[in-house]
Image (cartoon, rainbow, N blue to C red):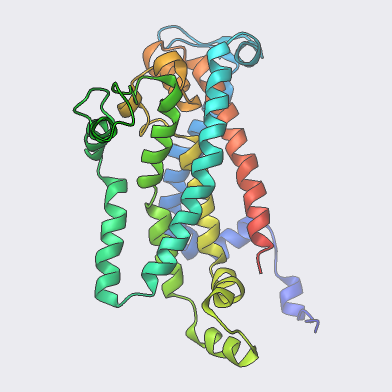
Length: 308
């Protein structure tokens, strides 16, 4: 069905200025957020892109050096290549696993009575906001005989001497992944719970009439397609947290980790930005990471758009 514009609508101006004037109240409400978004997101990203082509140490004026920082990253900096490998391994494991873990646990918790659901939601979400829990994991994986894991293994005769879980390159990444997965039930978990609560119940009744026979079919044919916005948001959060991992790694294995076995791109960025103050080089690292995250997010979003 096509709509025919009236003569009055055709005579109205359609420029940007006219649209802003017509919808000035809406723009007024959006202005505070848009201002802060520009000042603290768009502008810093633009400045970082420009600085990535300079030699800047925060004491002297930036000096334009072109592509030298990027060439140094991929052709000279061996530690950066180790960090890239570690980051992709970490992201490839923790990203999908934490995403599906959040979704499955949220789906199971959502089936419980309201009071029990609220209590379990708080219980599962609490580890993601409690920084002091790293102390608990350092005790669990302590490298002496008093560490919980070492104590159990020594008691059962599985090992004859303590394992250095947090300093031995063979074990560090595995320990970091385990701790990260345990702490992964954060914002995405809450968003999935909210999405499950807002699915229209009449859809399940209609699906039962159409031949849906069990809860798994409800999940794949009704629940997940109805939760596309929440699934999209959860994917973005999961990708961002997995590629930007450093805060949960450094307290466990130190900075830098032994033989850079758990060194990530963000840890490398912190090294050059916060310690060496080579801000131009740090910005180049940040730009590469930003582009990588955008590309991966676009791929995942395209996959989710085809869901259902």
